[in-house]
Length: 235
Image 1 (cartoon, rainbow, N blue to C red):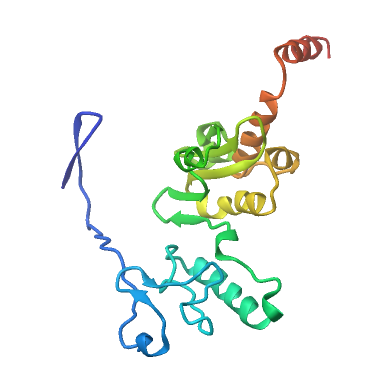
Image 2 (image 1 turned 120 degrees about the horizontal axis):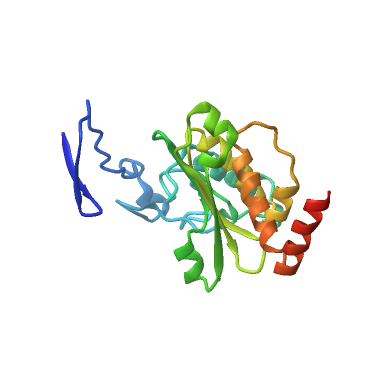
């Protein structure tokens, strides 16, 4: 039985098992990296630059051994960068950078928690003013039908612009849904573009379109909103 406090109120949860996540450390032992001039740290791993070159420029690294992102899909993306930069970037032309990746992550709880891009605090640190749109799944028809109304879609965008800076989805299928927003950020498509995309009905991904439509509504002036209401009465 786990005893915890939330908002000053004592609670308890009875569970069957407890999973302790103690973290991971890079496996750099026995690689004889000193002999080839590759610098590393026992906790952080192998040091690489933005092109995934180690301190020996003829040796590259990818994956958990050198990256903060400890995900299988992150290692795959990094491996593709290494292949391009070593085999398909003659004279260093057209090399890809690790920092250019738009990396989503998912925590596979129930419901799942998925995120991509910046958090509001990170955007503020970069001097960006932001606004946030949040759509609860309790307002999404498919989620209501499925009995999965717990959760939300939250999109962070630059104030005065439809530019998407980041997004968080809490839902049973959040890991599947985050890819649409990841694609939008990677291809520099904003909320206006998402609003114009037709989503099948009923689907839980309709929450993303609802968020984009909510942004579009903020573009309407009070006078325009009043006019539309009048027109709807006579239509």
